[in-house]
Image 1: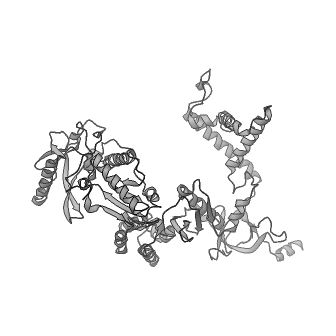
Image 2 (image 1 turned 90 degrees about the vertical axis):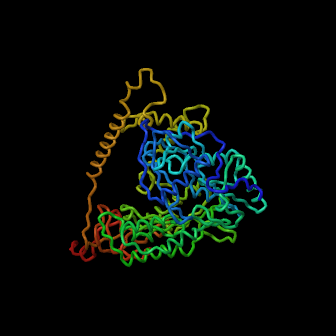
Length: 599
């Protein structure tokens, strides 16, 4: 076989990466020393056999280290018994200095595969054992058995910083050779190409890199030149991704949970594939109620329906398209009284909109008081935040069944203090425009406002605020971007004290405004059974003679200080009642009562 030398003969046949030996940094000079665990004769024989093979391969050596961590055997799936040699590094890990190497994001890796047609998956043989350890740090990785003390010369499994060290080295190797047709997730490398001929060239390049860098691959776990491949729990083919069959079969066999722990395990298994499930938050809502504190675990028919629906959705093998940055995105949003959701879609080769990802979440307590238009608007904001990485810098289309939202998009003249507008942005814009007018008109040469904007914003940030009495830059940065000739401390208090004073002054200012507002505000209250009329929303081009109010409606209950439930049917949700804001309600005075009062 060509390039046969890059494949290992067994798990002990591993190469040493041609990199500098790695350091293991400990935050304490006090060694971690633990006694060996007691083992059965069968387990001890297995441990002794593996230790001898590790010694022969040069992966470990005998030790006189003051450190020692105990050994145990774990279950190994492919062998069906406890044969995996594990070192209990928990005490040592508590003292290890953390490594901030960013770990790969699975969604980002999947996005790279959108245009590929042929795939290969490569698995490193005993991946961590490829990494050499600095001679000064091998003693820290010592482990004890009932028949001796040994220390690792290579990076072992179980040490806290091992994933970060290993992933960084593999990533740097691929970057060094400017590889743009392969990516790694720890010891798994996926090679992707747009044609079979190109793919074999790519594989040859990867094998040459493995040979140069002394990397050994495990042939039994490698898959070559496939149109469909399993990677990171997903099945990937040309432009499509779906859940892995094996994982779905496991979920399919799960029985209804009998306690909170079993329910958490089920939801954890399903949550991995939540982007494949439409209205996921709405489906699992009944199950979420059982996870709340002080709630008795009562498995109702509603819970069973939600459990079955989640399993059914996954077992029907949902398929998503992979994101294509060259195709326009379409965002479909929807909202209910329990959750908001969205679907990101793109046109496929057949000019049919196909899902890229689903998103949904349960409403927070205060969000449940929103009107349906506000909920639809919330769904849009939530979707744009969730799909930001796909939509940023791209043209996209938002689909909603709320015509009111379409009208709001076309409104140009919004009042700065209107509750439904972004008042902070509007007022800041107004402040900047006023200052820019002064600057532009004060110069004889009429400098363009774009060149004066930086100067104006700096002046604004360095000017003491009328309420806090401090410049915004000082409260944010703790210092001013210039040196005062008298000394900065002569002007302002230390930043912590200044922040407290600014907060107190802001609170005092708001309290004064509240007193002035309350002095002329008539507080209106409604009781259950009262009749009210509702102020309807009308577009600006609506006929003038349409009544502004509808009703009367009966007040069912008070939901909060500012919201009431009335018996006004909701045409969108098909519910018999609506929760509305107090500002939309007026007392209903019947004509008979008005006539009597006039008489």
